[in-house]
Amino acid sequence: MLEAWLARGWPAILVWGLVFAGDYALTIAGARLYRTSGAKDLLGFDGSYELTPVYQSDIDRERRLSWRFIVALLLSSGLLGGLWWVSVDLGFGPALFAFGVGAMLLREVPVYLRHVHNLWLFRHLEELRVAPGSHIEYPRSLVYRLSATDMAVMAVAWLTLALLLGSWFFLGGAFGSASVALSHARQSQRHRPPEAT
Image 1 (cartoon, rainbow, N blue to C red):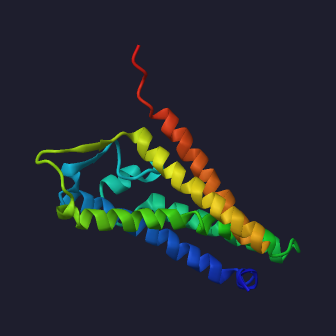
Image 2 (tube, one colour; image 1 turned 90 degrees about the vertical axis):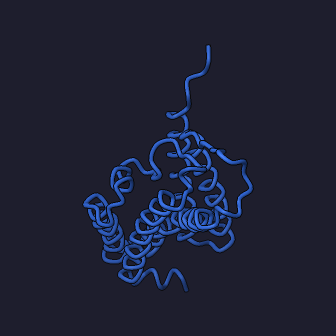
């Protein structure tokens, strides 16, 4: 049923656009709440609130509309449109398109979970029991490592579903999540503080 829905193409591309835009909007909301709720005084994130380097300056400035975001949205939607055309019009079957949609959509699941977690935490800071003047600092390498772990766990979950259901969509989700996990693991290594000699 899912694969048949994906074979239509345009609804899946529209859903991708909405999910991608929602991710950007939730990032802006989280960054703003982090700054205005007092969370910044208690929790420190080394570097930008945003993990994706290309969007960091836009998120740090809380730009609701970013040309980088618009270009990425158009390119990613165009990529899905191209996959759909190759899959349907050139006779490759719906598997390639389902894989591509899964790779893009399902890697957003842990991202949305992180957004919800951050928004809830920033709104309920008064419930934390901390010593006055306390401040917790998350090194950039740890932030990337935590994200890589979330993505790796989801990649295993998507792979399990792909194998159980024989689904190219979930296989794409495993691939997309694993690729982000590897990217963030590499970023974590790049941001590791130099070892003391």
